[in-house]
Length: 289
Image (tube, rainbow, N blue to C red; front, side, top):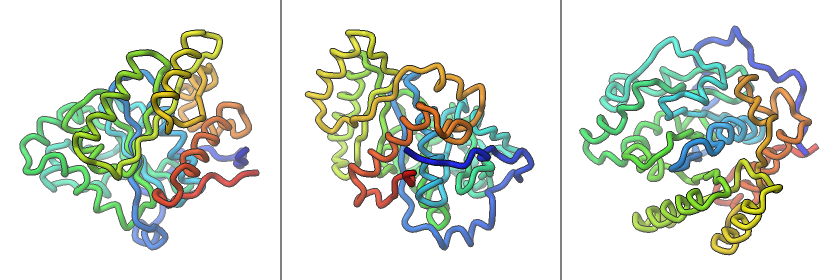
């Protein structure tokens, strides 16, 4: 179980810039790891996963940045990110705007936010106009490497040039799966795509989300999928009204309900992620109580 202070609510007066001096914080960061949370399908708990795990990462592994790449901006909304300045993909890719200029403080220790913008829906159009288009996101992230220990990417659903950028840049891919045949089929497609690119050093970390153990179909699909994918994470996130309420509270669950069952599930998920490949990610699990 993970213990957090009860008084971990964001400061509404936090400045619209990364908390603290970025250069000073950068001295504390080792080589930045990039962890993407993605799924070809939508509505699988992707943003909930990204927000809660980035919060837990910040609490245990140092300066963490969550970049909301989904033009719908669910992670930005949840973390109360209201950017004062906006940058289109065209300006970012051309170098007219730089990522550090756009960083917001979330009010939580060690956790900052790169907010989404609705113009991100055109990311693919502008990526296609650049040389080596699948490497652009990795190049843009270099300006963050001396500041943050971990960069989380909350990705839009679907397969696109932007999602290929994400896969090319990431050290690990966290994939929330619904216990349905179509969701499992998506995982097979994703695994085959990664194999076709030869990205043998990319960690694929799927887990089941929105599980209802009262349904026999969920039992059956989970059992069969675990036979097919032995590396599937053991932690399962159940379908829960407490988790759904996170969008109403607009905060990570471990921040406002640290002792709740939902918070402990995400803490267990983060601990498992760190224990499976601790040497390769080089991160620490949340501190147990």
